[in-house]
Length: 370
Image (cartoon, rainbow, N blue to C red; front, side, top):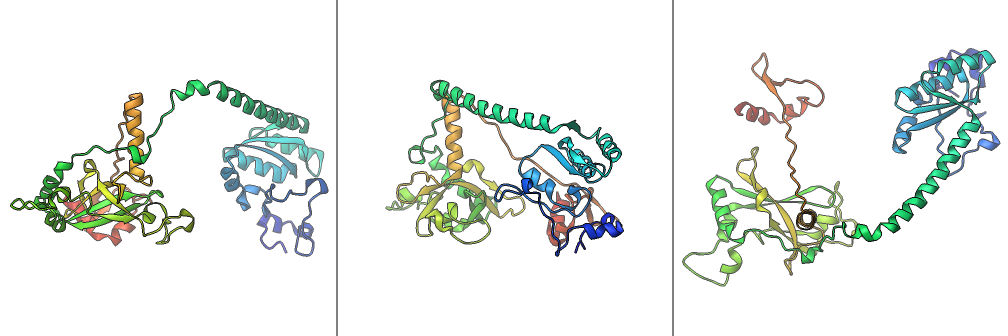
């Protein structure tokens, strides 16, 4: 019944009766009937199609940069759509002989009004350009295939061969465990977090009390069968189900059936000491990033994301002489003392909103101490 049309249409008076309605829905011309599964139909209820539809969202998702516009009326809906499309950053072409208006004068005025927002082309020009694009695309694909075949032998010498996880051996100091644990205890650390990043880029953590790890250190006065294994207590302190690494969705504690992983098979977390840090916001807790290993063979698991990155960097360094210098992006927020003596953000934009801090009042006290 056209209740959702824009005010401009509603002010059209008797012309409103000519709009599509449930008893007389809009129909497509026989030659313009949408192809099911290929064409996208977007119903509009305003003069500009960009105002009352999600067309811009659709075009962005399809990576569309150029738009060809035709239709009616030239000086109304077509012109409004062209101006909006240009402002949104699209390259617009108006097919002048595929647009229409109530009079020839209105048609000419509409085309003149779009002069600075689009280029004017004819139907024959558009068809020719589309044909050239299709021919060039086909020729380009054939040329790419030819070049790929011709350069296959040469490119092999520049291809990185990443060793499988079962053949990669990590280098780290096995004798430093005792010193690390005692240093953490001396610094007042009570807990050590073992952290790993799963294949969905989510952080998984397990926490072990430092007192428990201390109890696993070798007895200096007695040499027992446990001495060899317990001299590296950080190696086998924590395990995690393989399903948590590569088979669990990020939004729920649910194993994806198609992953063929389960909670029965367990992987061992091995710490990478270069990442060991005492958490500034929880000084009684330290955290270390880990690699994931097979519990029986101790070999690096193919599910380990950190291990994969290490192997890529290792091959780049050893085979190509490439070193990567990377680091974390440091971000901070500035605060000042407000009229009542309470810290408040210097920047009151959305990014620096204080709503979160209102819920986490302790953070304010930490900022004041810093």
